[in-house]
Image 1: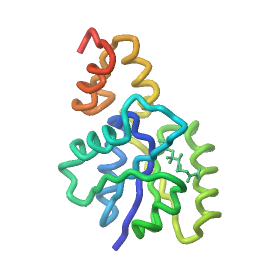
Image 2 (image 1 turned 135 degrees about the horizontal axis):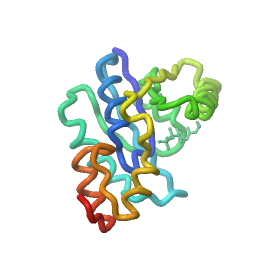
Image 3 (image 1 turned 180 degrees about the vertical axis):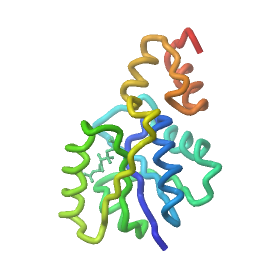
Length: 162
Ligand code: PNS
C-alpha cells in the first residue's frame, strides 16, 4: 500500500492546499495530512483548529486522514509507515526551499521520496500568509480558501466585505 504524508503548517488551509490534497489522494492509497506543531510559532489558528478544519474540508476524500505532528517530518513519516512525502509547488520561487528540504529529508531517511505536485494555475498566487494579510485588512478571501476557512477567518478578523 502506498502511504504518503502531506506535511505543512496549514495556517490556514488554502484552496491551493486542497487542490494538492485532491490530486495526491488520487495517486496514493492513503494520504496523511500532517499539521506541524511548532511551539516557536504562534499561528492564527491553533493546531487543533487546523486539524478540525482539514477534517471537514477533506471529508469527501475517504483515503485522507488528518494528524498533527511535532519533531522531524521523516520521523513522523516513518511512524505512519509512509514512504512518500508530498509537497505542492506553486512557482519556481518555491523550488529552492522545497529542493533543500527534500534533500535534507533524503539525507535523514533514504527510503522516503519527496513527490512535488504542481498546484493548479488558478491557485499559483495563493499562500496562507497572503490570505492572512488580506483578511487582516478587513478584506474577504473568497476564492482563496475553502468556505469554512473564509467564515472562520471573518470571525478572527473584522472582515467587512464577506
Ligand atoms: O507549510 P510549510 O510551513 O511550508 O511546511 C513546512 C514543513 C512543516 C513541511 C517543514 O517545516 C517541516 O517538515 N518541519 C518539520 C521539521 C523537519 O523535519 N525539518 C527538517 C526538514 S526541513
